[in-house]
Image (cartoon, rainbow, N blue to C red; front, side, top):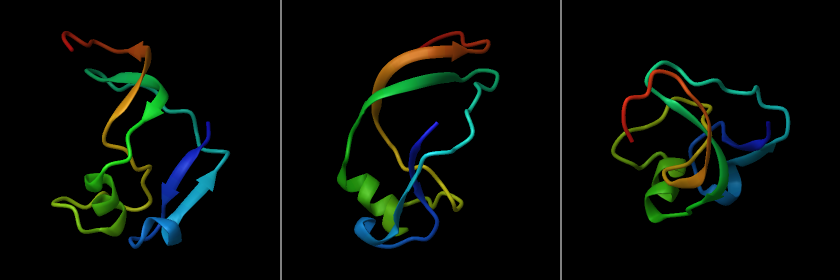
Length: 80
């Protein structure tokens, strides 16, 4: 799997890292795995990358707040 990663907080142009060899995730119980086809780029996401959002994600993380795609795995999911 490939994706953008953040290893330190700061301006997105300085801290986003393209990583082509990320491990393939699996769905935990009660969650779904989505093959992302489109992702939003919002002000909130820029704050997360800069470390200025309300809650900081532990580093490193793959940024994303809103996506569209197809569900490829769901484990004991009871609703949307």
